[in-house]
Length: 530
Image (cartoon, rainbow, N blue to C red; front, top):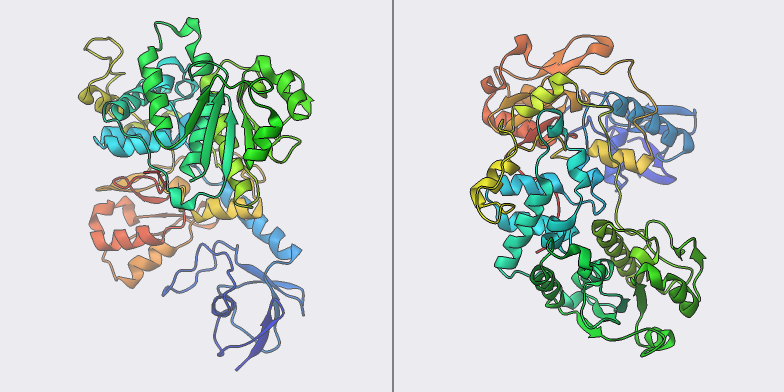
C-alpha cells in the first residue's frame, strides 16, 4: 500500500487510488469540474492540478494514481497560478452572463430577473420576498426611481425595455394590500444599534439590522419619519399614505422610533455610545460637517469619510450611509447604502470580517448582443411590445397586465449562477475573463428539451453529461463534436434533445458544473427572506 503525504500529512492508500480520491479521504478539497462521483475521469478542466515537491512537477489530481513516496502540495504558488491560468482559459471562451445587466445597474442589486419570473408565473408572494430582500421601500421607489435598470435592459435592443420599475411598484403595492411585514428571527439577537436619521438610508439600515435579529432604535429630529422622501417636489408623485404605510411595515418588525430627537441637543453622542453597541449615522447632507465634529470622525469632501464597501468610519463603533457620506438625489442609492451599512454592522456585531454586501464574481458577455443572440433570447419571451395599463389610475397594472409585461423578460441572466462551480472557483482563485479572449466571439445556438435548455456558449466541455449518458446507455445523447480548439458538446447530426430519455437529461443536468444545462422551470438558486 503506497505511503504518501498530502500537505505534510502522511497517508496510506490502496494502489490505483487517484490523488483526488486520496485527498478527499483526508478531508482536503481539490477543485475540479470534470470529475464526478461514480464517473470515470476525463482530465479536461485542468484546475485540479497539484504539485509533487519531490520532482517539482504539476499533476492532474483526478487522473494521477498515487505512487510510493509522493509529497503532494495542493496550494503551492505554482499550483495556484496553474489553476488561475486554467480558469482564465475557460472564462475567456465562456459566453454567458452571471447577472443580468438590469441587476448590475440597480444600485441596490435587486434580483430583477427573479422578480420578473415570479410575477410572470403569478407567484406574487415569491416576487414580494425577492424584492423585499434588497429594497426596503418598493412601493415608494416604484413611483420615484429613475429606473437605471431599464436603460440597460436588453429587450430595448429589440423594441422597448421591460417596465421593471412599474413592476417593482406593483409588487410593493401587493405587499401593502396584504399587509405583509417580514418577521425577523429575534432568537438570534446579538446587539443593540442606534440608527440616527429616519430617511431612506436610515430606514434601510434599520430594516437590515432588524432582519438579522438585532435590537434597533431609530432616531430622527423631525416629527415624522421619511426624510427627503417628504420633499415638496415629490408631492403628486409619491402619496404620503404610501410612504407612511411602507414605513409602518418596517417599524412593525420591532423597530423603536424616537422622533424629535436631535443629536447634540436632546441627546449627546456619548449617551448613544453608552447605551448602544454600534451607531449608524444616516442624516442628510446638511448635517455632515456637524456629525463629523460631534462624533470625532474624519471627513472627506462634503461628507463623512467611510470605507467604500462597508460604511465604517474612523471610529469602529460608528458607521455612516446616505447623504451624510455623499450628497445625492437618488433614493435607491441611499437605500442601497443603508442596507450595506446595516449588513456591515451586523458582521461587526457577530465578530465576522466586515465586508458589507457580498460581491461575487460576475462574468459578462462583452459588448452589445448580436442579432442572432437576441433572436435566441426572444424565443423564451413574450413577443409583444410593452404592456400599458388600461385601468385608472393610468400607471397601475392589473394582475394580467403585470404578468404579460413580466413575461417580456429575455432571461439573459444565468439561472445556475449560485450553483456554478466556474463562478465559485473564479472568485476563489482571482481569475479573470480578461486574461485570455478569443479573436472573435463564437456563435452558439441553445437548444431546448421541454423545460431543459442546453446552452453551448456556457459549456466548458467537461464531459460529465456525456459520461452520464454513456453510463445510462442512452440510444441518443450528447457527445463531443469537432476537433482541437473547435471541439464542442452537441448531439450527433444536430438531433433534437427530445430523443434523449427525460431521466437521463435530468441526471446530466444534475452534474453540469456551469449553467450550460438548466431547467427553465426552476427559479435561480437565490436565498430569499420570509
